[in-house]
Image (tube, rainbow, N blue to C red; front, side, top):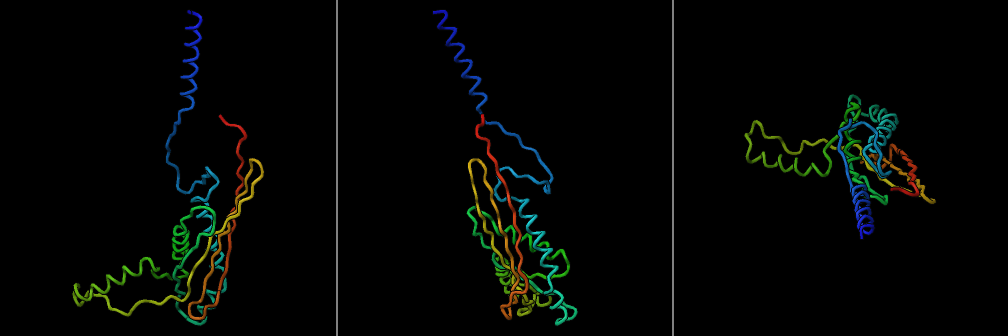
Length: 204
């Protein structure tokens, strides 16, 4: 009986050790927002930053800005952000890409931006209400909006290749600028992000 009791005690202690080791634990630490982190191999904030910066630089180097300024001396081209479509197999909030792209263009000083569809309605409503509720001196006039010259739109696609415990995930982010008056595409660009994800065969 004593031997059996010792065995039971040992089993219970081992079970407790295994249970404690298997319990999930985590810690949280703050890092710089521009530090590259990739935990899962999925689309993340680093990819957004890299793609946006590369596409903006490509678009600003295109000849469409100089061509526009030759025809419209002293004026920057006006761009409105359209839709960035997610055609990948992941859930990707493409609005973040569009907003980052918009920020980079505005900060370049070479392009002017107007409110997109998501914000334009609220601005128009405010302007209309001012006609009734604001003083005549401060109310903003109707029909004074600046029309956009170009529409920016794009898409995200992904391809997954896998063999054994190794996966290769490739993202293709494309963008294009379209002359609103003529439907002519004045610039096209694409940026590729490729990731190799290797998973250990066995893990504790």
